[in-house]
Amino acid sequence: MPDELPDAVHAKIEALSERGNIAHDAGRIDDAIAAWEQALALVPQPQAIWDAALWLHASIADALRAKGDVTAALQRFEVAGRCADGATNPFVLLGLGACRLDLGHADEAVDPLLRAYMLEGEDIFADEDPKYLELLRQHRLVD
Image (cartoon, rainbow, N blue to C red; front, side):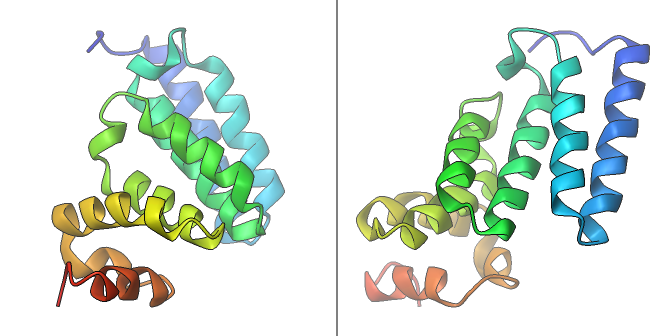
């Protein structure tokens, strides 16, 4: 893992991220995505080694999913999954599994959904459609 981002860069990324969070909370999804994309552009290359890239890609993916652009959301969750600690991030795993199920790829959804469950338990599914947890139950992987 690299050293921390320079303070000035980190501050700009944080400010843009917060702008994105505020826009997202206000239902302005496109504005949120734009702010997070601006923040992501400030992350040095290779981006995948920085924590900021993980949460920015995951935030963009979640917003795309909320807009109904599941294919683009899956692509972003896949990028987030390749970032530092992304393969073990329960939010990313949940997003990967949910998008895959929503796209009709139930068999490909089971593994990431199960890994999210193993890391966070049933609570990670609390704000999600019950179908994601039900998939694990159908496979007799959880009670």
